[in-house]
Length: 114
Image (cartoon, rainbow, N blue to C red; front, side, top):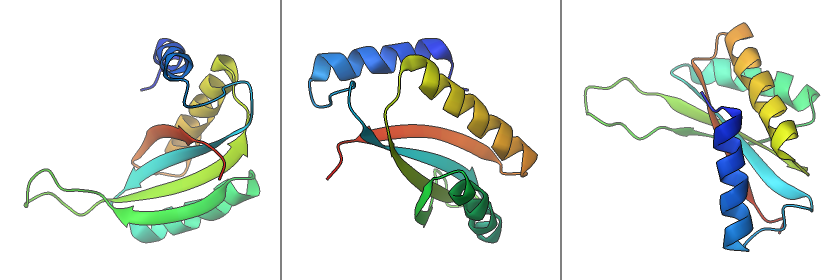
């Protein structure tokens, strides 16, 4: 689980890297993992109602050949985050994943707006 301390470290790394202006809006991506592709597609509709845009569903890389197929759902949103707001979003996504029987909220990434 991503905790507030992890987010603090993440923001510190962003500040040091100078690749992103964390005082501006950025493109945030969020990832969910499940073995049921249809369930992820249905979950996308709920996330879109919250203002997130569907990006893709793609197969997760298997560690072992015997592993079951799993899929990632990636949604995005252009927004400005602080440590607290990103922590709130993560908390919400963990709750939504549980409520919608999605195996795992897997975290976030950030990029510049193109």
